[in-house]
Amino acid sequence: MKKTRPAADPDAYVAALDGWRLSRVRSLRTAVRNAAPGLEEVIKWGHLVYFSNGPVLLIRAEDERVLFGFWRGRRLNEIEPRLKGGGKYEMATLEMRQETKIDAATVRRLVKRAVALNSELGNPQAAAQTKKTEGGSTAGRTRDASAKRASSGARARPG
Image 1: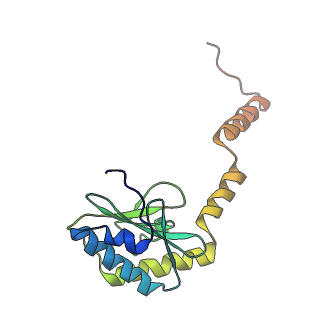
Image 2: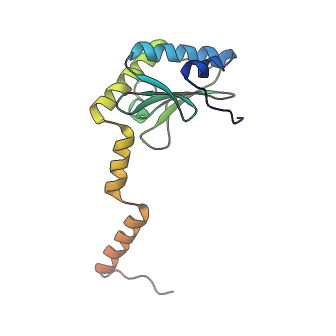
Image 3: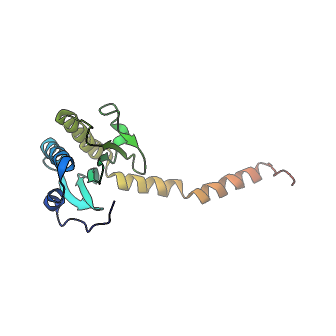
């Protein structure tokens, strides 16, 4: 995918698309906005991002696919089993190609549940930051485990 300058606003983002990606993003965008009219729609990280008590979902058009992702998407698999987890924040994304179908009713259910999760659980970015702070770094946990083994009398094998 070629590096391009981010769109000035959501309408410009959509207007820059063509073909099946244009029609797919338009239909997703319409279903998202109908499902949760209070969502804030912005261009962030170069694509459409929707916020309600933190980021809720994204729509990202690429050369050969459109990604429909949810910050708490791993909790939405009962609604849409094709969501694939990855990254931080319980993120899960539906990778859509030209032949991929999703009906507006499913989009509405996903959006409503994702907004409800942010309402119930708070901003997913803040929640992830809290986990990181509480858990410490990996290096810290490794040091703690080494210290625990040393204090328990466990010894390393001689080389």
